[in-house]
Length: 232
Image (cartoon, rainbow, N blue to C red):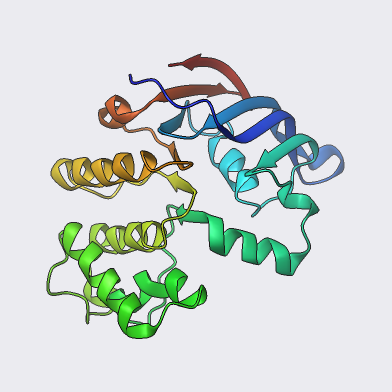
């Protein structure tokens, strides 16, 4: 594994997350500590149900933590007003989650271009850039198609293009290669590694796909809601 830069983009200390109330409640995170440094790919690995997806959802500001401290790019996501939180995510974060969340009435180029359009990029320029990235992901000539015309793996590639296109500082990925064949999965990881090498940027990947481990700058092993080992 390659060394990563020392700038810390994400710092979590004693983070807990409880779902439900009373006797029916359950702790998904039990005092998790971790740091995400700029300049590489950090992978969260471990058995299903160990808290990996919950952790990146809290980092993304999509879930609020129950306890502990968290800093993401110098901000506490749970302390931001809703309008500020939305702008913070739009400008700084890219998401690749297991549910593709593509808009069925938009073409795949329009879907990929959404973050650029939300940040004020003119439509023509946004679609041009979207088409270029879609071509890199093996979707040449498909920019005008709609999500229903694509396979699951192809829709995953559109979701990946959408996450990368606006060049966010922090890219959060939940099983980005799960629906992809080995060749396409390798190409996606190469793109993520290239993105992670930009100054002040990092990629966080939750994965069960051991084929991708060689792309990691750091492996963070989780079990039962805690970080149990870090490999660099």
